[in-house]
Length: 214
Image (cartoon, rainbow, N blue to C red; front, top):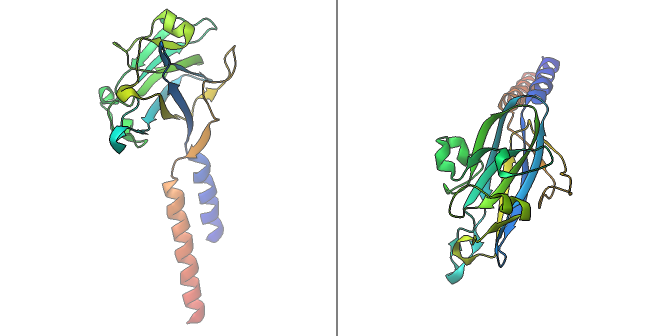
C-alpha cells in the first residue's frame, strides 16, 4: 500500500505544471521611459500567457503610489524588429475579461495580461509604460525609449515581475541578454493530488501505529 501511494505521488508530481517568473525595471529618462525587450520562443503551437505585476514605489507624503501603467506589445521576431511585426497588444488587464489576470497578485487593472495562441517560432514581448496610445512607433522600438512618456506620479523607475506560462523558452537576442532579466525562476504549481496522497500516507502510518499499540 505504501509503495503504491509513493509511486502515485511521484507520477502526479511529474505531471505538475510550472511557470516562470522574470523581473524587470523601466526607467525615466530626459526624453522618455525605457522599453524592456523579452525574447522567447515556442517549440510547438500553443497558447502563451504572460501576466504582469507592478510594484508600488514610496511616493510623496509617505503614500504608496502607482509607478507603472504597463503595456504589452508582442511581435514575431526574425532579427529585424519593426511595428509591422506586431501581433498582439494589451494595455490594461481589465480588458482581458479574465480573473486569471489577477492570479499573480495584481491588485490594479493597469497591470497588463496577455493570453494568445502562437505558432512555433521566435517572439519578443516589449514592456512599456502607457503613452497616448498602446502602440509603439518604429522609432521607439529602434531606440528602446518610449519617446515623450513619463512614469505616473513623477516616479524615476518602476519595478515589475512577469509570470510566463511554462511552454515558453528564453533565448538571447542578437545584441545580448533579455532586458533587465535577472534569470527566470521556476515556480511549480501546487500539485494538489500529490498533497492529498501524502496525507493518505500519513493517515495510513498513524493507523498502523495505533494498531501496534493496541
